[in-house]
Structures are given as C-alpha cells and as structure tokens.
Length: 70
Image (cartoon, rainbow, N blue to C red; front, side):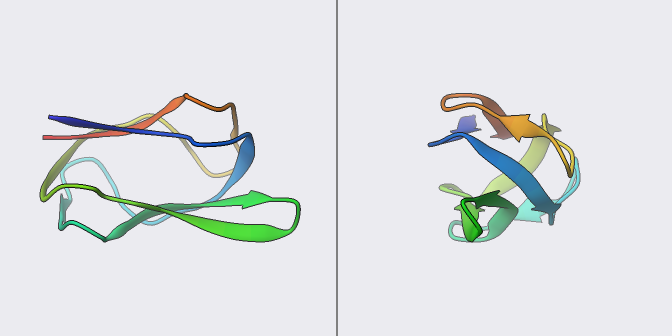
C-alpha cells in the first residue's frame, strides 16, 4: 500500500483517476494548481486506487493525503 501525499499547498485542478482504477508507476493521478502553475501528482507504484481523498476544487495543505494505491 502506498500513500500519495501533497508536497505543497495547492488547489486540486483536475482529478484524472477514480477509486478502483488500475495505475502504473508514473501515471498522473491529479493535477494541482499553485501560483498559476500546473503540478502533476504521479503514482509512485503500480496498483489499484483504493482511496481517493480529494475532489476538483479542494484546497490541500502540505502533507495532506491525496490517494492510497494498493
């Protein structure tokens, strides 16, 4: 099980996966927006998205849980 956490304060601009989706290492899970820059959040392991903890429009803080990959 791998936890994907936010590395900075940002807005969730786009969510590209859903719970139950199969992802590979390097796949983009969500795109964050901070200071008019788009920052992709990538899967760091192969697996299935077990939990997705953000939605488009959410404001997240550094360290917040974005997703859990099983």
